[in-house]
Image (cartoon, rainbow, N blue to C red; front, side, top):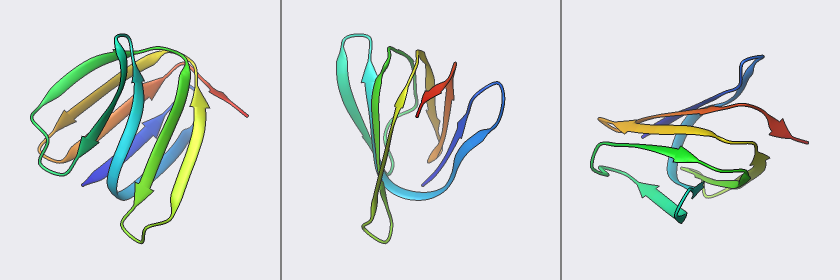
Length: 82
């Protein structure tokens, strides 16, 4: 599946992944391949991505939204804390 992570200023991440864990408003949740379509609000917290190669990437986001549809994930956030 593919993920695109965007802030209003720039693209943060774009690529094929195995899974992503995000900070939902009711707690963390993970999206895997062939997940049911979903749109969810996110709170500030850590996003953890596991790439197809097995390597891991993580970063801290401000609030935002995530959408999963047909193995395409859009993660739209207000900003990334570096």
